[in-house]
Length: 253
Image 1: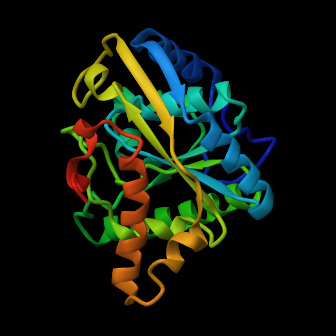
Image 2: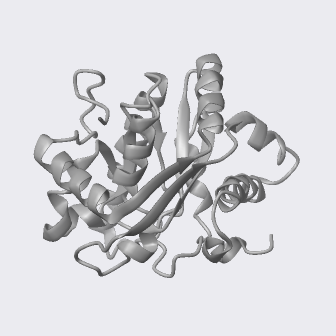
């Protein structure tokens, strides 16, 4: 179960609906055969750290439209309900996917991989991302899990992409950031496939760290280098819980 409106109300949050939830859960259950979760010890540690700091986030790799529901199942089955997901606006503009986006509670955002075509779209992007940051902060302050696909869009080749470093503004200083590796779903439900096939899917939780600890490693760097270093550190954590075939831009780093 995702975050509900009676738990936290915000105008930028689109809440999970029963019909969409049932459809995406069916899709996950059909496709993920078998479905396995690893790194529960890291998930338990993240929970304990969150009790100290008050906020936590999960950063999975992103290769499929099914990633959100798969992470949702892994979290709920391991005692972490009520999450909210950052979701790129493209899914909302596509009639084939718009009605399924409420399979999980989410916050729409204009992804850094999509360039505005004109001044009007530039304005829309600014306003959308402003309220998205407000909603993300509200989720974190209320101690609910925030799931952020920091690559900014799906990887059509399956390997990790270099993210836009601006994504780090979504996290508070003391947010506990836990990397998540999803494998198998790229093969089952890649870009442009309408219906998923069946095959093994694994979700692995990596080592959680406080955002302040990650930033401290880059304290002596310039602003842009610091942001890039922080986001690269997060991506390397994701890489470490993925099979080598998914390492992409972070192969050998």
